[in-house]
Length: 92
Length: 132
Image (cartoon, rainbow over all chains, first blue to last red; front, side):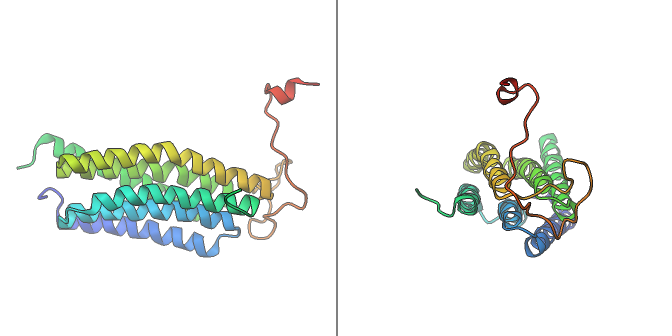
């Protein structure tokens, strides 16, 4: 894609990496387990956004399948972990 | 050759990037689980939707557009469910907001768990409020 110039790619990846670093800081520091679960949910979506930007920058044609799968699995991890913290079991 | 619509999709990608950066700053700076949940569950979801749809339309492949729209619609369906589950678990485990009901600030690092289990707030005009 000629409109997505290399300087624009560097800017996009820098902002996404900075966001990821902020999420990982909160994930290490976060006082409660549920803070970390919130960060897991957000980190999955930021990684998906990095994959989409990578696909546009490099041109690898298979990343959208992985995007679809990760968007489904991230929801399941958040719900299962929240239910485990709440009740102590996942499947009753 | 880049058409007019390509500039529009690049602008859409910038829009999504702005929302993701805003949500990350919110997670970094907010002092409270509930406000952090508010920041991620709306900001990151909307930014993800704008960025992925922009990338898919910029690539122009029909299969990619279909997959991106499917992932975005699924995320819009399930992100409120996940946020609701996390918020309900936090309320039942007794995670406190950073201000107590009297309005004074608590230390966000020390007293995050209330000693007695918290009750849900009573909303004025709800069914539980109308019964005497």
